[in-house]
Every structure is written in structure tokens, then in C-alpha cells.
Image (cartoon, rainbow, N blue to C red; front, side, top):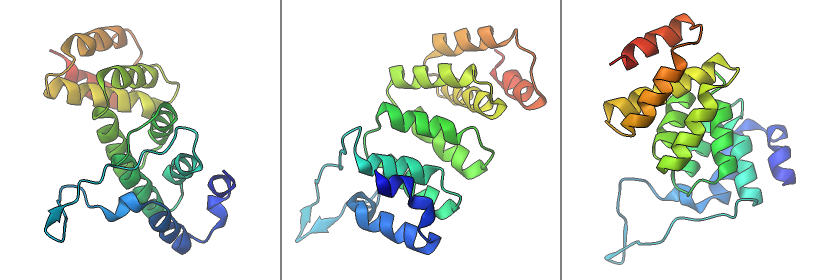
Length: 178
């Protein structure tokens, strides 16, 4: 836990090495199958307990000022099952304007089970942060394009129509209009 709270104190060039060393999941490249002695590697992904120091470290790294460290955190989260606090940390990232981190965050949320995705989107869409509300609209746009959760998307869009919209919100709402 101490490491997670003091991560920012470690020099940036050492932070990413530290994460690489702590998380063996990073050595597995997604999308590729590796063979060891002509046998497929079917090693299951690491599954750290929800309250583990490893998860706390990753959540801290998500908010790191060094974008490379945050990228490593996203790579880790792509390869482990997410817990509620991970989802909340990803939602927090969506309060910022970093385009790449927003894209990664939305992609991670979209891959979650329906109930988790709905809960997260419902929190984001009522946020005081315009950036988080925009993220919710982006998620709804992706769901609409993929023709997933159509009733939920319609319900959220209808509920959102009554709000005073920013220019960017209006652009996304226009995209969501049926």
C-alpha cells in the first residue's frame, strides 16, 4: 500500500521498470499465442484480490503524470479481471482531457459485463464533470453503433435530452439521435 501512495516519488524512468517487474502479466502480449517447447501457454491471467497492494498500485499509476506509466497501467488492466475500485479509477481518468487515456478508458469500460457497463455509464452521465458526461455519451454512441443494449441507450439519451448541453455534448447527442 505504501508503494502505491508513494509512486509519484519514484523517478519516472524507474516507475515503468518497477511496474514491468511487479506485473508478470505485462510479459504476455495480447493477440499472440506463445509456445514453450512446442506447447501452447495456457497460463490464466493474474487475478489480484480487490484490496491488494498490486491493484492499488495500478490504480495510482493510472493517474500518473508520466503518460508512459499510465499506459502501462492500462496494459495491466486489459489483462486482469476488473473489480469495482478499478472501474471507479477508470471513471476518474475520464474527468481529464488526455485523448489517448480517454480512448483506453472507454474501450476498457465497453468490454465489461452489461451490469458493470450500465452502472458505470449511469454514474458518468450524471457527473458534475463535463468530460465524464462526454465519456458517457461516447460509450452510448459505441453501444448504439454495435447495436448493444439498445433499450438502455434509448432510455439514457431520452433522459439526457432535458439538460442544457455544451457544444461537445450537443455534437454527441446529435450523433445519438435516431
